[in-house]
Every structure is written in C-alpha cells, then in structure tokens.
Length: 285
Figure 1 (cartoon, rainbow, N blue to C red):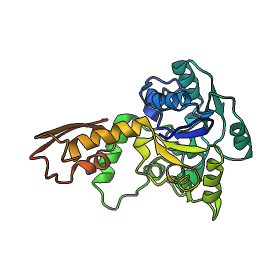
Figure 2: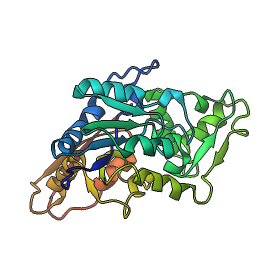
Figure 3: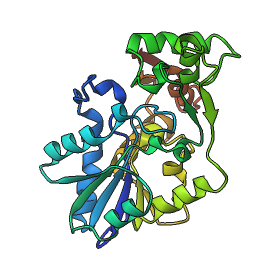
Figure 4: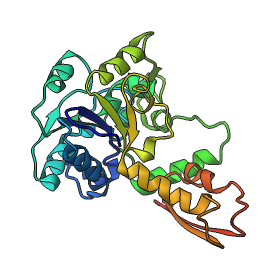
C-alpha cells in the first residue's frame, strides 16, 4: 500500500458473509471483520486522514433490503477496534460525498451495502410481494448447498439462484418477478460518485476480486489503486504453491469454500514444479 499521509483511503472490504448473522442481525462470527482491520490500522498508522469502508452483504438483487444492512457490521467493527465507526446509510450521492469530504483525522467510515444499488453488480430483480427473494437474507446452508449442486448438474438451468427461488416459491411462480439492469449512464455515475469519496483506493476484498463489479473495477484510472494486507496474504499463499521457486514437492492443499467449482479452478492447472497435487475440499454443506 502506498503512503497514505493526509489522504482519504477507500477500502473495499469483504466483511462479513450473510451466514455469520442470526435472524435478528446479531453477528456470530467476526472472522471477516477481523480480516479487514489490519489494513484499516495500517492506513491510519501511516497518517491517513480517514478510511472509508465499502462492502456488501448477501444478495439484495440491486434494491435496499433492511435485513442486509451493514449497520450491525459498523457496530461490531467499532467494538473490535475500540474506536468510533461512523455508519453512512448510503454509498453514493451528494449526502455521502459531503459526509466523506472533510472527515475528522483518524476517522473510520462504513458505507451502506453496495449491492443495494443495481449499478454495483449491473443487474437486479424486482421481486413481487410474497416472494422469498423480497425478504429472505439467505437460504439455510444445507438448502443453499443442495440448490447449488442441483444447478451445477443442469447445464441449461437458470443462472440466477434468486430467480430460481422465485420460480418455485413466489405467488406467480416467478412471472411477476422482473429482472432489470441500470439505465445508460447510471453505472458511470455510480462509479464516479464512489471515486469522489477518497484519494486512494485499496482493494482488500479477495473473495470478490474476480468479479467485475463497480466497487472492484470502477475506480481504476480515477484514483491511485493498491491492494490491502488481506489480498497480499492470499496472493502469497498462492505463490507458495504456484511459483516454481517456492513450491515444495509434493504439493498439498486444503481448500475450504462455499462455491467449489469457482474455488477449485485455480488449482486445476497443471504445474511443472509439482509432481503431485492433493486437494481436500471442505464445502459448506
């Protein structure tokens, strides 16, 4: 990360996943939040004026959903860091830009769920009243894993797990649940507003780094960009098994994941430096 003295650093974090929250919003697992703290502290220790955190929670399908607010994350982050964390109930727009324009030195600010805006992912779903997608945070782990396995075995199954849920449980069986995309120019305006919030962008969301979402790629070319300590740690772990100068033989790995096909892909390439590769996949079933 470059020197951050007197700057506002926008950190794209990945904390936490929906499975760490109970129905009442109480966070039961701090792992993802703790993972973001070292980069926050590093920026502040180097003199950053403020750290503005951006993240997502669940799949609200491009519309606000109170069950997926990041307010509980702000409260827990404040407890863990022992310093005030200001929560802003939006992530773009004039009010957010004003809130981040002249922050107090050493401030930590968390913006609302990025995925409440269709411009973040580039697509969304307007669910009809009574559809589980309009209110559910996430299917139970076993049910969600079973649904993913079923979709993976059907080459032409619908790519949207949310819409697949609509087709099964919505009153109209999905007929009244409408997919939509942002209008022309809205994505550019969304990304431009994010870029106004900070002087440097730090990507510390390794879990979503492969997605071309606005908060992942939209600030490139607008402000200086860097990776955070969590991304650095993950890249070093990959380097230990993929770099011929570092790899040991045989190479073994234990892969813990929610999306097995996506996570196994990087390990599937043949490596000349390793004579054998063992992978133990632990899925969230």
